Length: 430
Image (cartoon, rainbow, N blue to C red; front, side, top):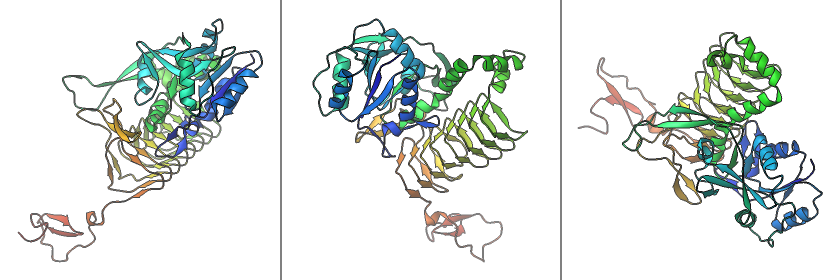
């Protein structure tokens, strides 16, 4: 197949990182690399342009074959891209990509600008070979949205497995049994416009990556299944571990259903389940990682308990009950730092376009910027953004820096302005 995938710069910047959307992290690579790989495998020449005027010229000069326009902030899985081209093969352009609303769409939809049409979500991706395009404007996203608005829809088929996961939040009359509907599918399209989209997309990366791996290596997958001697979920996950070169797993560690990059080290009594670990990741003694994506060369310190966390490369994370958080490149999280990850009444709100906006989630942590440092005894409220290069430490008066020599034995003492005083006398004599 010959043709072109023309990717328009949207100007979208992901806070607090300050990175363009095209550099958002996804499962060991950047969104730009993911787009290039997906469309190149379909035989399309990938071209990136800064303006609609450039895109129009490339469409006019395109060789025979499909021509696809999309924004640089759009994640499109290999399966979704292939099925879109197949579904539009006999349709007159322009044709926009649409997905039926289900758990896989709803998982990443909040805070995005995708078009919701009843039971369908229409994304900013359109096939335009042979189509007349509107005059160029300065706003690439608005220009492409005009094309999408006048295009017919191609509903891309997909199969989704939904796993209901109970959430650690207080039930209410509206939601008597809070659950997270976790989707497993390789047909995913997501508009990356906020750090929560980076987090959510990576959280479902496990299903995407495994589906891609099983399609590419069906004989390997069959062999691993047969090694389990039974089709039980537990035995199957134990066998479905993809190891890179030079991986070291301690005999007492437990690793199941995961993808490990080159040089990964998993220490004694550590657990890694349903996770993706990039090259050079170190999982220290007794650490636990569940449903997480860990960037290259990240250090997970001893006794860390991480659930659905995502880290960019070169981070250091160590925390008990570290859940639903996104950690930037080179950032450091002290084991004694605390991140609130649930809102017991209502939904967690985050900053978006200068306002606090609901994420439609009651279970969400925070985002730590590139090279930021979060020290011990710091407690971060859910939904917060820690800027790049920020250093957050505990208050000096929270440290016992002076221990009186005449402390009476057996009497309870408390910390008060850096020293210890008898219980009930804090704040001065009473």
